[in-house]
Amino acid sequence: MESRENSLQDPTLTHRLFQLIANMSEDERRTLLNLLEDGLLKGKCRRKYFRIERRLPVVYANQRHAYRNFIRDISLGGVFMLTSVPFRAGDDIRIVFNYDDQGDPIRLVGKVARVTPEGVGVRFISVNHDRRAAILSLVSKPGDARGRG
Image (tube, rainbow, N blue to C red; front, side, top):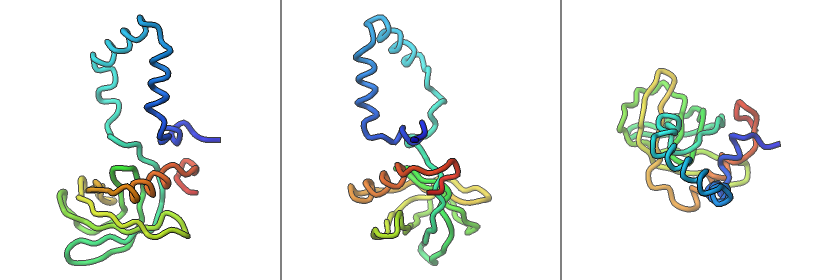
């Protein structure tokens, strides 16, 4: 059974929204438009992409050293990695991880977007089509609430 959160990664999400809107009465569409224009969702959707918890081994490097640890969560736009390395927001970082046992590793370049005591949030930079497809496959895999699977 697919959870509601995993179904949000469905690439047909926009199509489904259009279908729902197309099936509304004109009055319902106007009400929805007014609600959205009035900021119904402002502050509710903080992130551009849905994140899913996935604990994956990762190798990451700055200009000086390479390190190993774990990814805590991932989305099409970025990743949160557990680390005690003293990164700063804006630092460039290279990331390499496997999303399954058979595939080639995913190699990405990113910028540190935020730093916390437990790790760093990294925003991906210029993800090509193949890497984007691999990440989409990873975040679309069923798993339990802690992201195993």
